[in-house]
Image 1 (cartoon, one colour):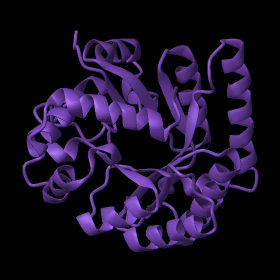
Image 2 (image 1 turned 90 degrees about the horizontal axis):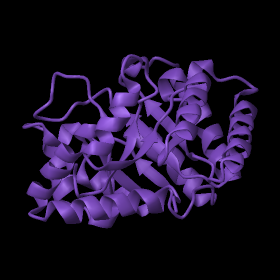
Image 3 (image 1 turned 90 degrees about the vertical axis):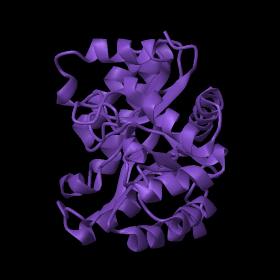
Image 4 (image 1 turned 45 degrees about the vertical axis):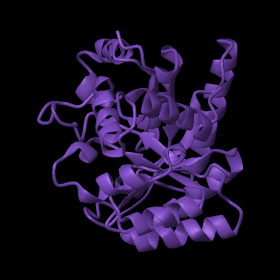
Length: 274
């Protein structure tokens, strides 16, 4: 059992990759000190599955929303269906004497690398989900790949219109430059770093890990994807989060305990978890 407390602020444990051993995956995470977990989601049914799991497990939270790959699934009723899910989950949570485990809208944004949904659709649905987050007063989880300028322009529009929360959310699995990271920080976002920070040639994530103010950093596994060293090649899971923390501690020449405590506190602050 670890004597440190960690928060995996982005994973997909509702994914079918965990169908055979999901309960054990949660247990292994706990044994490694990963006390808090946030399930990030990609479309309506995925959001429902994550909300069910979050209600089932203590200190497990989730987002709801449409990943840019899945924005082609979005229709005129999607925003209302997400609102209905949020309200239904809140009612269920109150019956269990706990807060609503849906704590963010995400992961939302733009992905021009794979272009699995048309770019104009991605942009429109991104804007609509930013408005939904504003209506529900929730932070957002941003997915961006090969689309930084277009994504940033939409986020800057939301910022200037007052649609972002003071704690705007997180730039998930950030792979951009330090200069790009600073632009996101100026909009009220924090930066999420994942398994790639442990990879030998990941120069940009390592630079950000060294330079960023520790109160602006979240740790993520993105499980089952992006497995950190030394587990690379295996299915990722939340129990591997401390490997990411250890790499960042090494890069910053800081105690592991400080990394664990501050990034956990950051996750609770950004997602308003008491």
